[in-house]
Image 1 (cartoon, rainbow, N blue to C red):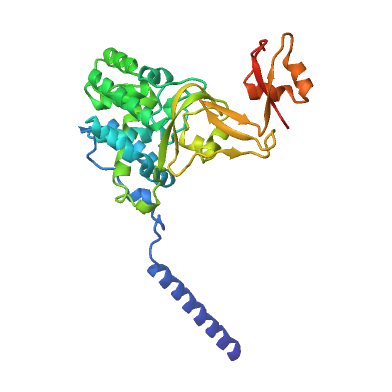
Image 2 (cartoon, one colour):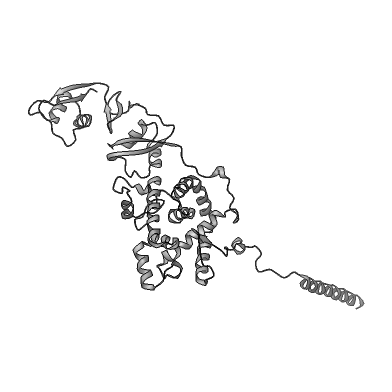
Length: 376
């Protein structure tokens, strides 16, 4: 009996110690925190004072503040900001120089980022195109060519000049940069109609469609983040920024039927040609005179294309046309009643070769005409 009581007493003592220890640990356990990890966005705050094109955005107005902060946090996208900063290295030196030449506000460069993220060949669903997202009718009004072969909205130099001229004209009309940016986005007629209907004279009091109501704040948010990238934790090695290619310009007269061959003859390739000249829409050029960008180191060359249809043929560029010159040809004087078919059969060559060599597509033969016949 004593042994049983002894065992019971020891067990009770161990249980009492366990309970006391558990209570002590619970009393001294630190309070759990709601956020174990801190979200970076929670400690990033938009500025209280914002200027755009020298004009202060009235952030003391509650809805204005809310609209700006919305765009600020949407634009605070790490991947997108890094790409924006890297593309600035390629395009901004030129854009900034042209803005400065005209005495315009430097902040207008951020408009290009808001419109296209500095992508030269981007098109919108509404038909706007290029870094400055010009509509076809606006582009043509300011001297740009837009057709099936050429779209100069994708020509960085010409499009920049056109966009800045357009912005200058809008400022003459509105005398206020916030309204200018809104008009650039929606069209000047819409902004004028809205101002007259609503009896207001500034952008921040206007009730506009969703896109235009956000647009000026988007430009302002991009300016804040790009111009203060280090402040917001974006530190890029300047040697890693994209750079404008080292190019030269050559003046050519169209038509050029095969730009791939033409590019090879200039010492480059078709991909590089299209990369440097996104405004060329097709693989050929129509009639006209064009300035084409080429790599600075590219040197013209005469191609010996053994794999081409004529053995030992050469391809040369002459008077705006690509000419395939066979190693050997003979001259044939066309007689009355002769057709290309009969001549091709006589010399055992293809009709297509005679037509191509003599540029006869769509043309008829005339008696006495001299044509070249390839010798295979």
